[in-house]
Length: 263
Image (tube, rainbow, N blue to C red):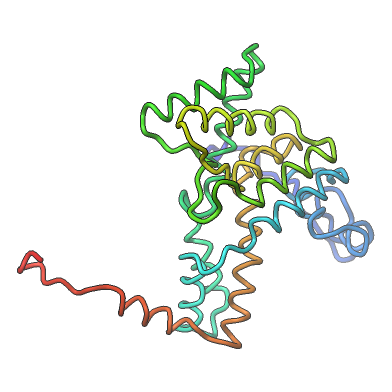
């Protein structure tokens, strides 16, 4: 990663002249518009190459799987921002995206990093079962949470995870990273003595890595997906506003405490 380091003054993303626009070596109007989907365009923009059919189809599956998750804090932030500044759709969208971090939507990135590290051990000759067991036992012993495991609602399994992995197996795209994810699922249950949901973030990371998607851009998938989801919330907020209601309910739920009383 070269962020922050000076490099050659160049870009391979886009150029244009009076008559044409070129994106990643493709004529925008002649080659892409009317011929490629937005999902294909996104993959091209990020990787510099057009996706295979499997890469395109599973990118769609993964984007749909994580686009919506109800009135999460970032959705509430978007809706309350639009209520306060109805002329600033972009600010309301940004408010929600800025709330996407390690707790909300960041787990896919962390799960991907875990899988990349585990895969390196497989490449050195270790078995998936052994690597998974050691990771699960260490996390349990140290009281650490493993990224991609646990969910407050979906127990004992996340229906999105099951669907993603089932489709990956059926289409023959499930590889070493999906195998590691499933080995981790079994190892976590064994180490804890009870099941812990493997959530959609682990499945997203595993399938993306098996489809040769850049590990450093895994977080971009939930970000892009949730952008669509937040715009849905904001469209509803325009028609059926609840932003101020959410703010009011927050005020009702929180008790004031005088710090000098120490109560």
